[in-house]
Every structure is written in structure tokens, then in C-alpha cells.
Length: 448
Image 1 (cartoon, rainbow, N blue to C red):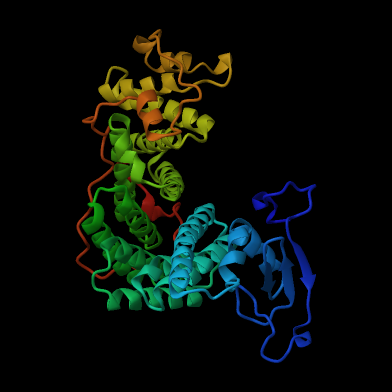
Image 2 (cartoon, rainbow, N blue to C red):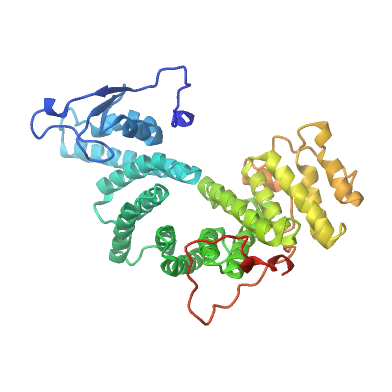
């Protein structure tokens, strides 16, 4: 079953819900239940010990349950049930206050769950959380409130992932209208709005319009956090992907370089100051892994696996894995390759090479045959034999763990910048419906 990996109960245990077929005609006129997700007449009811939910079909019911309902069902019952006794006006105010607090807590949970599935590419499971978040926010603030923009954007992103571009544009239009009515909306929200418009236009082949929106995204995120902050990196990444599709390879590589630059500087700062990494959430870090993998693959294809820029991408991705505390094996291989590349281009005694080797030495090996210090010695023998404390079990679980396991001077420079941002072309933009990186237009890049 496709949804099995996200089920709370093991496969051999009965799920904590029961799906039962119902006949809409069996209910009195005007009282037939409707689907939680689609608003269509319900044909299935999902019975749980806390609440009974209604859906149009079994697939929608299962997606809703595994997407969010399995986590919030215990709270939905009390929220949706009418009070037993009306009570005094003061009692009603207290109950409304308590309900509002509960809804605000559920808003945060629904948004977090939706983000988790969006980053994982499980867009069908992200929709239920984003939709429930939107419902709670509407109950709290009313239609069109600026507080709903984040939920609109999650709904749009999930629909883009499901190739439902018309629905995505509808939610983006709703978000845009809310922002227009609230001129004090933050630049961070405006950035995400333009980024999602750019992704929709890029997916529909409207590359010029996509670049315009992504330029606005980068501008707004730069106003909010700075042009070199990691929050701006998705805008650079998606703009690079559009340039790539337009055969504007130098522009694509330059904007991919901005992605590496932002995350490299972030990780450098985290290694000297753990407080820097506390405000970057899990969803952003998982998205960064996907972006850096794409940058690495593109640089390796166009510049060559031995190019120093490819080595830099490997090192940045390896550090990010260590910061996240995940994919230790991949991190070890990436840092090892980066150490070999830096040793070849910069020399084993270069400050940067020594740092990469030091990080490699600090990554615990799986077996004695994979001893990290021995591997590092093959790259830079002058650093072999340096006694280091064990960091096993202390890798990036928190920003403090990362900083203590992989200390780093705050003023360390990058090995080399791949290329400067080129000036905009004087002519019109090139159009293309696709891009083959093996075409002659990319020839000679490895020598740049």
C-alpha cells in the first residue's frame, strides 16, 4: 500500500480507524454529510474512537488520515462538539478562549505536517494538513485575512506538485488578494508568494514570467533577511533552473553558485556560533539537501567531477548532512571526495584542504576498514596521527553538537567562487521548451 510508510500502526496491526460505505440518500434532505477534503457528497465514513469523519472515497479518506487526521482526531471531537450547557456569558467567553488556543496550536501542527510532506515530495499527503490549517485560520481570523496566506501557499505548492496548476493559481490568487488588502504583510510572505508563482509559471513553460516572479522573490527575501541568507537560496535555485531550461548555462551556474554560497556561509557560521542555526527549520534544511544535490549533479555534468566547484558542492552538502545529523555514510564520502579535489587543486598544505581533512577525521567510520583518519592521511599525510576525540553519537543533533564536533573559524573563506553573476543580456531572453546538457552549447564550460 502506497501510504504504508506513514501509518502509525505496524502493517500487522489493525489501523485505528474503520472505513464504512454509506448511502447519501439515506440521510434526510439537506443533512447528507459531505467530504472533509472535497466538499462532495460523502460515500465513506471513517470511524475512530474520537470522531467520525466523512469522505467521498476510500483513497481520499486514507490520504486525509495519514496526512493529518491521525494526529488531530483526538482534539477534533471536543472542538466540533457543542457545549453541554450554554452557561453564563463569562463561561462562553472562557470556552471560546480555550477553543481559540486549541485551534492556534492545531494550526502550527497542521503547517508542520504539511511542510514535512511537501519536502518529502508526498504532495497528496501534504494537502490534508494545509487544508485543515486553512480551515482553522478561517475560523480564527475570517476570510481573506493575511494570516491565511501561509496556508494558501502550502495548498498552492501541494497542487503544483500534483500538476494541478489551475488550482494552484487559484490559491496563489487568494494569497495575493490577502496581501494586497494588507500592505503591512511581511516581505518573507511576499517572497514565498512570488516564488510559488514562479514555480507555477516554470512548470507551465512560461519561463519569462517565471523569471520575473523569481526576481521579485529574491528581492523580497533579500529585504527580509539579506541577499546572502539561506532564506533567499530557493529563489536563486529556481531561477537557476529556469536559466538552465533556457540554455543560459553561465547564468544557471552563477545562480547555483549563490545557493552553495548561502549554505556554505551558514554552515561556517554554525560551526563557530550555534545560535545561528536555531531559526532554520527542518523543512528548510531538507529542502537545502535536495537543492545542493541538484547543484552538485549539474556542476559534475557541466564542469566535471574533478572541478574545484564540484568539490565545493560536495563539501557543502557533506557539512549539511552532518549539521542535520543524518546520512552519515553519504557525508563521509562527500567530504572524502572534496578533500581529494582540494588537495589536487589547492595542495595538501592549503588552509582549506586542511580544514576539509580535519572534518573528515572527525566523522566516525563504520568499520576499522573505513577509518576516517587513514583515509585523510592518504590525502594529506602531514595531518595523520592527530589525536581527536570521538564524535560518534554527537553529530548535528543540535546546533551545539555540530559546533562542538566540527569547530571552524568564523572568518574561513571559500575555496573559490565558481563564477561571478553575469550582466543581463542586451537582447531578448532566449526561449526553450527544454534543455539537453549534452548539447554543444555547454561545450568548453569545464575549462572555465
